[in-house]
Length: 199
Image 1: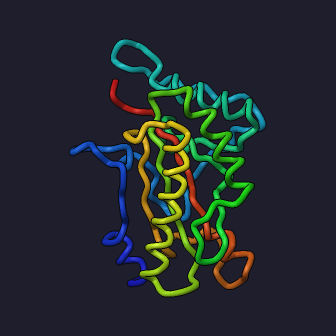
Image 2: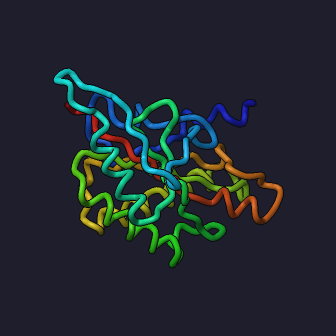
C-alpha cells in the first residue's frame, strides 16, 4: 500500500497556466484507466446535457467522437462524465526510451488532424513506465514520455494552453509487470480528451 503514497507527491504537470481549476481536475484519476463505454462500433450516443441557455454542453465532444469514428480511431466515453473521451490506442515505447515509434507517430498524426479542427478541447497526456529500474528513474521517464507526445502536438500547431502532461511513474500499471509483454503494455502514454468548460 505504501508503494502508492509517493504518487501524489511526484505527479508532474506542464502547460497548466490557469491559477484555479484546470481540466486536470476533471480528468479521470482512477488506476489504471477510467471506466469507459466503447463507442467505435456504433454511432456515438447523444446525451442531453444542457447548459443554462438550453444548449447541448456536449455538442463539441460529440463532434470529436464523430471525427474519431470517421478516422477509425478507437475511443470510449468516460462512464461518469459525458464530456470526457478516452483514446483507446495507447502510445507505446521501448524500454528506457521516450522516442516515438513509427506506429505511434502515425496515430498521433491522425489525432492532430482531429484535434486541430476544435478550439474547445483540453488534452490530458498521461505518461507511464513499467517496473524496470528504480522508481525515481521511472517517474522521470514517464514525464519524458508524456512531454514527448505533448511536443508532437505542439509541432502539429495545437495550442499550448490546451495541452496538459503529467507522469505517473510505475504506479498505474495497465498489465502485469511479471512478463515482457506486460511490461511493454505498461510503457505507454494515454490521451484523454475533455471538452472545455468555459461556457
